[in-house]
Image (cartoon, rainbow, N blue to C red; front, side, top):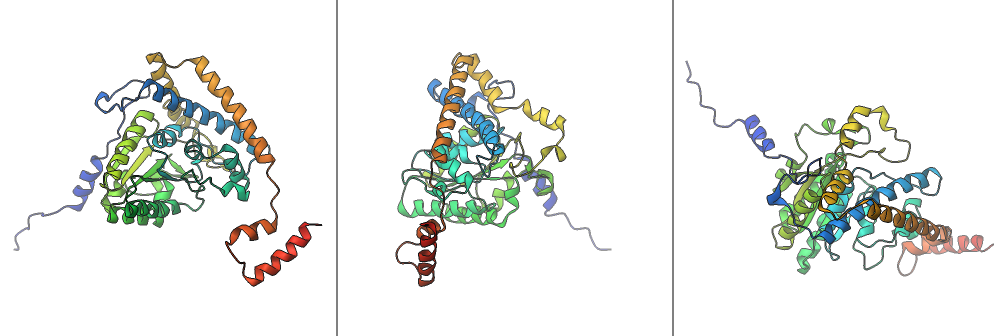
Length: 371
């Protein structure tokens, strides 16, 4: 009878051991209390107020954008309510020279990185001027192709690295984006070259109507970074202090030559996936919505700042009124943009001399449009 061999390696136990390491990092709990004092990023009162201002502004922008979409004054729009902390606290940790590679839900980060709101509105309408990013603003237009921004971020990060630029490329995707091949290619490339990139997964629980549990058998999305050999962390994406802290640390490591980081921000979108006909009541229950609303990033951050005596209803109302006025002005600017013509698209597509066939088409359309 053959002797029973000792078990040398159990892949299941190894998997479980890895997954258990990804506990959710949190600083500010749902009641607005600091539960991890050692990790507090110690932002100044002015910085805390500014971060709260941006979050309130973005919540109003979301509400107004939904209304404008329903009025037919905006085109494509992906609601952001519930994700303000994961979006804005991460951008808050960046410097102006850093580059943002956004997904289509990430317009707020672009705005606070310098993009004019009117340009964002024109992008929503599909106007070519919506893609005309000012040279001083280090952002790409929002990526519609799911996950493609991860490839772009890896490339920009490598460019920074080759030039010796002390800056990072930061990009975002949703939980569904981690099922795309571009997701792994991007983190693997950056990991192999130890490039200064920050990859953020905004795990808002649903890829349109597909729940996160059906995307992957992995217990966390953060653990996917292990395969690329890069540091990874799971963070409470509705805790602005925690999101800021992990992003700031990731940036410091990146510019110091320690390579990229993958961050999974656990959050929730209160609205539909986009305003293009998605109905979340078909795949989400009111009980689930209510449970996540208790974790609202604005509520917990407001509670924290009010307890510190640096935020009140008067300040918040002032932000709300300013947001409404700036949105109204931005829409006016967008409305005043010239109507698009076929000749515009031909002219802006090429730099230098046009191919002969497009020269012919340009002449035809220019003549038609002049009548």
